[in-house]
Each structure stands twice: as structure tokens, then as C-alpha cells.
Amino acid sequence: MGNYVQNLSARVNLIASADTWIEGDAIRQLQNTAKLPGMQYVSGMPDLHPGRGYPVGAAFFSADVIYPALIGGDIGCGMALWQTDIALHKANLSKLEKKLGNLDGPLGEEWQDEIAGSIATQTGFQQALGTIGGGNHFAELQSIDEVYDAAALDALAISKQQLQLLVHSGSRGLGQFILRQHIDQHGHKGLAVNTADCAAYLLAHQQAVQFATLNRRLIARRILLRLNANGQAVLDINHNLVLPAQMHGLQGWVHRKGATPADVGPVVIPGSRGDFSYLVLPLASDLSLNSLAHGAGRKWMRSECKGRLSPRYTVAQLSRTKLGSHVICADRQLIYEEAPEAYKPAENIISTLEGAGLIRVIARLRPVLTYKTRGECCE
Image 1 (cartoon, rainbow, N blue to C red):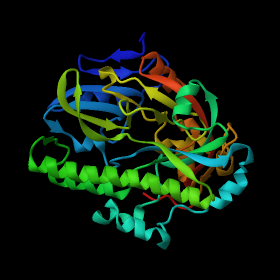
Image 2: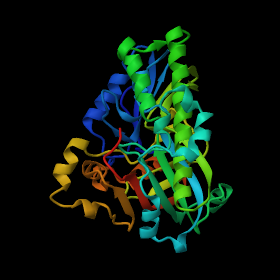
Image 3: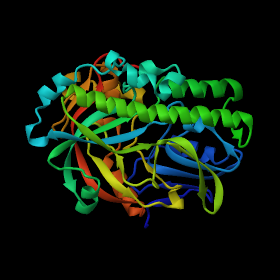
């Protein structure tokens, strides 16, 4: 594993190489979480960056207590990869962009029968289904750029001749509503396992995870319908949730805040909108709390992006990337916040995880067309 794992203390480690960009505030937040009552082990991923009180890109293992505040408001957020039947050699970006139209509004009447029988009707947030949301969420058509394990790629029935669709979204306003309920009642305190309050949170949490999974499926199907295409789900992985687990010989609860699970088969680790994404096979390890990076990770705070980039790039220039892909984002603030320069290089994240013995790379995915928003960003 070389110098890819930094032991910050007996119970805190950081998966990072010497040239991995990690802010001091993120490390301080990581170390502070280890001081929470009942917290046993904490592991930061190479995409670690500061969050609102708690770091993003980390996994936390506790015993006898769970911490909803560690998961945050986007419960169930994750990545879904679909194989489409859109031929790569026939893909016309301008035509695809025009066909997509606006995906920001609620699903139409033709979807209502399906929504009526879903988990969403129990939550009151069904109007958000099929929408991507703001922040770093996106839907992206991709192509296979490089294959490192042809057998593993074939086993997933992924074709180099056709485009893939990657959807990154979560539980929308539902997860935030659940977090707010917890904060109003308990602040940032944890919930003792086997109590009524803990059971109530876990039930609501599970509904949000189901909502997020359904949301990604509906987003993918909505996009495919707009493009007159068909597709098949290859994988769908959550990276914001809490689950019972056994780590380091102990039974407890693993919290993942922007951390991809390493015990559920192949996963996608995306780069920024102007960078490659990677399809990888995780190698589960207690060292990383069976977790991986969930993306490239932010390098700049959102508040500083426009000031740093607007003298160099226009909005129109940011809608095209160095890899030749198109970005659909009509929100002028968001397109600067989500610029490739604001993120760490995906290659460094992947090489660090490889060096730590945590993944094998199956393939590299090139962005083709990224959808963020056609209008002012929703929440």
C-alpha cells in the first residue's frame, strides 16, 4: 500500500498520496468526528473536502449510536449507470441536446400511474421525482474511452459501440426534510440504537434511500424517452446512507457521507464534468471501512469559483470541455461552481485508490453530454 494511507491517529486514517489535494479544514473535520460519543473508526477518502460541519468524502463507523447529521440532507444520493442503445458513431451532440429539452420540471401525466404506486406517495415529495436537482448532481451521456479489464466489462454487458448514461442524484427535498426533523428534535446529537427515535429515523431514512433509487431510475428513463432510445440499468449505488456493518471485528454502523461502498460489486467513480469517470471493481477492506471515493472531490469552495473563473471563461466557453463534451447548464452561478477547475483531477483519485489496494480499474468513461439544468437551479 506504500504511502497511500496516512494514519492520523489510532482510529483515524486518510487514503491519500503525497500529491492529493486535501484541505486542512477537511482533515480537522475528519478528526473531530472521531471524538463523537460511540465513534470507533473514521476513514477519509482521497476526494475528502470540507462540508457543513462534517467532511464530505468519508466513512464513519460507530457502535450503539447513529448520527443522522453525518449523513446530511441528501439521504440515498448515489450513481446509476445505464447501457443505452445509442450508437456512438451516430451520436450528434447538437441533436441530442435539442431532444433532451428541459428536465427540471415534474414528470408529466403519462408517468402518474407509475408514481401513484411508488414510495413517493407516502412522502409528499412526489413532484420532485424524475428531476436531478442542483449542486453537483447531473446526468451524463458517456462513451467507453479505455478498457483495462475486457472480461469484467463484458460481464456487465457494457458495449464500446454504444453510449452509457450516468445519473447522479438523490432524495431531493425529502432527505433534507428528514434531517431537519432530526435537527429540530435532537440537534446534532446521535441516536442510541434500539430506541424509538432511532427506529423512526431509520424508517424515514430507508424511505429516502428508496425514493433516491426510484428517482435515478425515472431520470434515466425520462432521458431515454426524450432521446427515442432504450436502455438497461447496469448498477445503482448509494453513497450517502447509514447501514449496520461489521468492521475491525466489531458490530456497529457505517455512515457514508460521499463515500461509495466497496462491498456491492462494480461502481462508477466520476470526475468533474470536463474529466473522465472510472468504472472500477472495489476490493473491500476494513482499512477504508469498505468504502471508496465517490468522485473527484471539490478543490475550491463554491463561493469563490465565479470570482476565480469569470475573468478567464465566459458561460459559453464553460459549456464546452477540453474533452470535446457539451455541458447543459443555464444557471450562470452553477456553471462556474461546477467547472472542472473547481475539482481535483480524477486520475489522482483513482491512482491513489489503486495504490492503496482498494480497486481494480475496469474502464475509463469519457463525457459526451452533461445535463445540469435548463433553468434556474432547483434545490
